[in-house]
Image 1: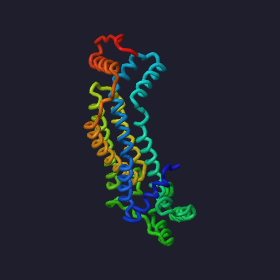
Image 2 (image 1 turned 90 degrees about the vertical axis):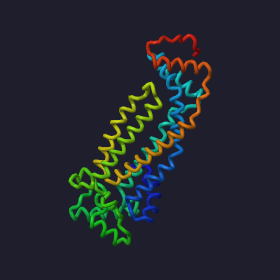
Image 3 (image 1 turned 60 degrees about the vertical axis):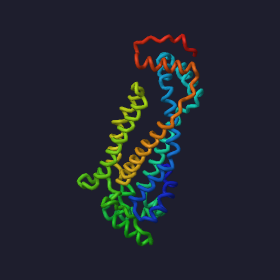
Image 4 (image 1 turned 120 degrees about the vertical axis):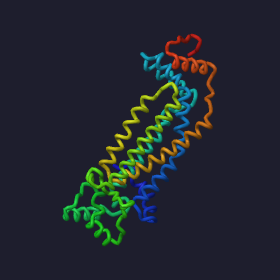
Length: 300
């Protein structure tokens, strides 16, 4: 169910064994994974930059073939093929991030399995001991820090996981500990980081689309992402909130730096003379919708 949980645990375990801190292990692993995915981000942003250059052409095709979706898709694909643009490349980082999130969910919810590598029988024995003592056993992460679990793990000759992170128990869930002020800290930081990231993304989209094109999606994400983050940090263990906060901060810095690099090194697409004229025409049309353009001047 938890994609990449196993491979991710192979990276998490040796780091945890060295520093013996569950929280700092999540932070370090998140940093490492984001560094490894930088090439994908660069590829995605290069594709996005190319797409932005021809966006007025796409918008003009959309206007021209508003009632013929098939023709629009055919003409749009011709443009993408002509200039070597893969519209799906922008989705690759999102897909990778989703898989990584699912991996982290698996590890965070099942630390006895993925970090301590206990067998199913041993985990069941711990669960039964906690249940007999009246402890909550909905999720593995909720009982692996209980005294009964710690005693059993110690008897196995293993060191119990250190879930304390700056005085915060990362196994706790905000939804079940609303009165504990410390539990609020990391989820609130995660939401604020997401808000900041959404504003940064919107600002970059506005700079790349001075005519206001493609801003509707940015406005939607501006509100959707913080709300989604608030919900998940409310119902999930604080360990996931720590991952989300760390990942968002790193992605913001990565996005900001790569955007500057791309802006300073961006190359103009080698447009054909005819496409240059069409592009200029489309830009004029976008800036002045009432201006009539003689489309007969441009070839298909």
